[in-house]
Length: 310
Ligand code: PSU
Ligand code: MN
Image 1 (cartoon, rainbow, N blue to C red):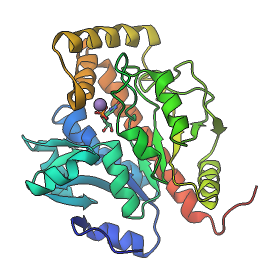
Image 2: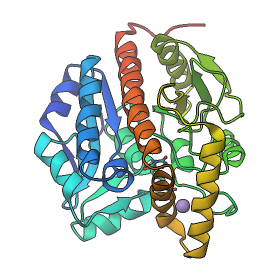
Image 3: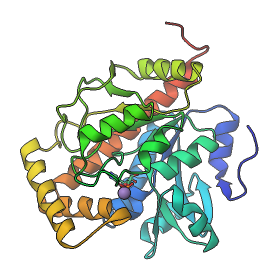
């Protein structure tokens, strides 16, 4: 691999795993700093890492600590990040600013993809991706263009219905990102198992997902394969209930004049409050489920002796 940018710090475990060709799963950290309340955020981050290990893969949580880009966190670092009082939500535009000021922060899907790609990681797990915000055609998450230039398998539960999902699907297409359903024909909407929108293709096993991604790479394609996994049935929410909460949260955001990077964290928190924690339970369950599926795909990729032909 070519030399990494100088601001990168690789954990010992990460270096060893990469050396022996072990399966690795990148994990984002904006969910830790901006997506979940304390102390649930740290417990979840730890559980998700354990879920990846349980499948025989190595977790690499990506974050900024004291102006350094971390690939893989030691247990103490994970706990510190989860409890820091002042953290920044790090999107790609924030790296220079954060490094110049020695800041710490959680990396969004876009920022995590940037780091994971440069570090040579092929699989990434998250909860949901950002997208096009409802009513603001120009508030398009940096996640979407970054997915268009990051050749990783990105495992998620689709995108939340706080977003304009049809517009989000269109931008994914423009960015060359295939939306692949994992054991589903429907694009999931994070808390709910279907958004009513179709996927581009369906796979039913980690091996099929790994084979499809390999062919995308064989074709020299530089965009991600978005593997969408429906949230576990037991904790998923009914669609009408979610829509009600989302509409209320969006109206409040407008009243309070909330814009830009603050929009997503605000909507997430309000939806969680309005659904009285039911959405939080669903969120935790799907994050762990996605990490497990991602680890299985990483294992399947590392088990592939030669690229499949089909
Ligand atoms: N969507 C969620 N949960 C999240 C996020 C999005 O359902 O935690 C976070 C992710 O880190 C994502 C970021 O990359 O918000 C997108 O923010 P923005 O819309 O400002 O690009
Ligand atoms: Mn935005």
